[in-house]
Amino acid sequence: MKHFLLFIMLTASLSLSAWAGGKVYVIQTSPLTCDFCAYDLELKFMGIEGVNEFDVDIDGIFYVKTDSSLKLDEARVKSLLLENGFDFKGMTEKAE
Image 1 (cartoon, one colour):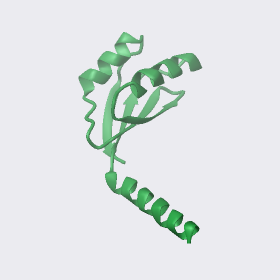
Image 2 (spheres, rainbow, N blue to C red):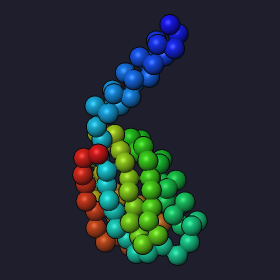
Image 3 (cartoon, rainbow, N blue to C red):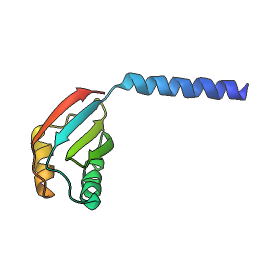
Image 4 (cartoon, one colour):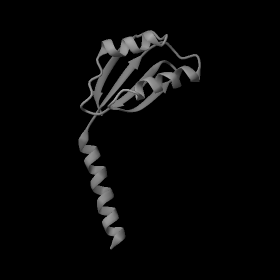
């Protein structure tokens, strides 16, 4: 019986998170030259409330997953990149 209840609770929590939705921002910059640079940017983005995941492609493409309540505007992202020595080549937003 305990296993059944645990299964029900786990299934419910997974389905609720799927309904929560979210956004994925694809941000383009110049290709990265070192892993430390990517890690530093990860810390900056993960410090923003509502950012859930950060992934980077060595070719200079960042994937930022957020809660549906967070809206990352282009000016904020551009400023964050420029402050950390990166250029800003563009950004797109899509539903998760």
